[in-house]
Length: 255
Image (tube, rainbow, N blue to C red):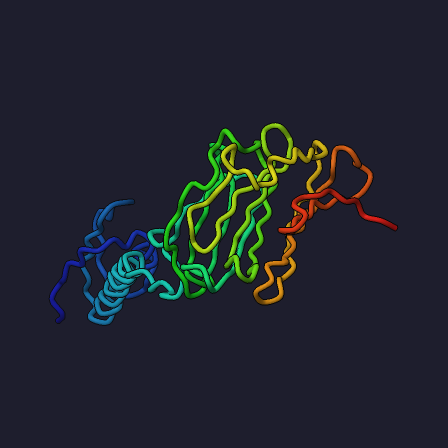
């Protein structure tokens, strides 16, 4: 004769089937909810219920282990938020790539405070890092949401140059430039910058570009070209051109 056993597990759904079983089991005052104590007189029935309890326990612990499982490892090639350099800018961005410059790549952008900042990057973003930043143009010298254009050139005997063009608060073309890695020149103190020409820009237009013509070695006969929409000729494209012999002049696109 199999001795009675007590199963301390919740079998509210199972014991209703036990009540209707034809097996020789005694049930006394089984509760309708909460933990159930069932006295079994059948060894086979006891084994069945013990197996059910063990399966329920395994299911609970399995669910807990799944819920607390360690997260899958992150892709090591993806950048983390700690390594990304935050940038906040308004307007467009201009860039230069010049191997003669320390850092290789320069990016020019207008900050929310209106100033223009230079980012110095040592190559493509896939393999490079930020070398440094500096405020190139003070906020008071730049129009809000200014267009920006940049160009580099090697004018022979004059060495490597970089020019950054933008729109002034007076709605005229403005410029900062550097030669041979010397300090940047621009603003009211620059006597050769495009600012002195007063080339007025058509309000609301979104056109500004810059390019250069390479000088023959040793001649210094280079040419800078800055394209924009002139307030004096709003229906066409204008260019401000510069070369060392004639200085700046304004021309329009001809048919």
